[in-house]
Length: 382
Ligand SMILES: *Cc1c(COP(=O)(O)O)cnc(C)c1O
Image (tube, rainbow, N blue to C red):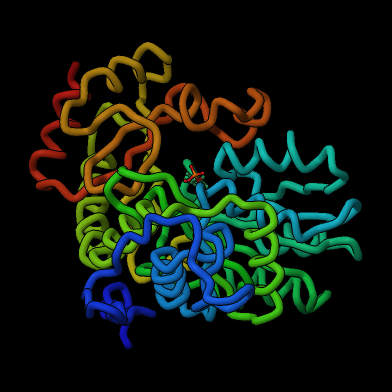
């Protein structure tokens, strides 16, 4: 099956008792047994629920994996991966991570004895340099949030695995989605999504996903999902599955509109830098072209007027773009990383990587391009 068919049919079968074409929402916690321990594969919905199974099989299919897991949030999916590690183990992570991932690493798992090295994953050498005998996991995002840096998944996987084949490489694929890049095919072991974003696609649920292609790894993650308990509910599983059916169509439009917005901003006299991997002068444009099918719908930029007041005036003036956290929905959103999504990163760290008051992040939706550009133009003139 090709990707555009997998989004709709991947891992799906019609429901057995009625032939229902769409998976029913099995809103149940438990399942009748005919004799102790004799059941139809479902005992208790923390372990498995048929609506969640339908979604998890689809998760696996769209990332070219063998197993998928649905969690109650993106962060609980990351939490599950880190719980495979032991005190003293080292994790190499990008220095431009989603704020919540950084917060979890530094304020939750550091105190349980995990060690984190944050490096700029723009360059493979940076990663190679900090690999040690205790390194167990490399955690990377590409494109990064909010500065749209690109990491070379294939080269990073090769480099760390040439030192030690047991080091796991995990990719937070939330920004790109499997429509644009499929990390398991590029050498990664684990793909993670905040399904809250593009996979769900309609800003109506909070969910996380993990996808893997290895049986033993799948067993380990399934144990932690079951024992830890942060599972997705049946209603949310249904919504996510419905969202994924249009992922390829939505992504195509997100990419078109993203390109139009990036070009518009780059040509505007009130705008400074524009961060978009589709530009030829983006420092990792060649890597982006190699591993991504297109460049997505996320665009960040700075106003030339670097004062916080100027950014706030813009952020209060858009009307088609809603000022809100999150991304990846059909509707366009605008966000101020310093005060919103990245407020949990300490100021010195933020400034070091360039998350300053003048930085604005757009999640470009699938509305009419003309309305989007007109909205940005009027907000830039306020
Ligand atoms: C939103 C997000 C997360 C966290 O996911 P939640 O569903 O909010 O828990 C992780 N990584 C990235 C890149 C995100 O955008």
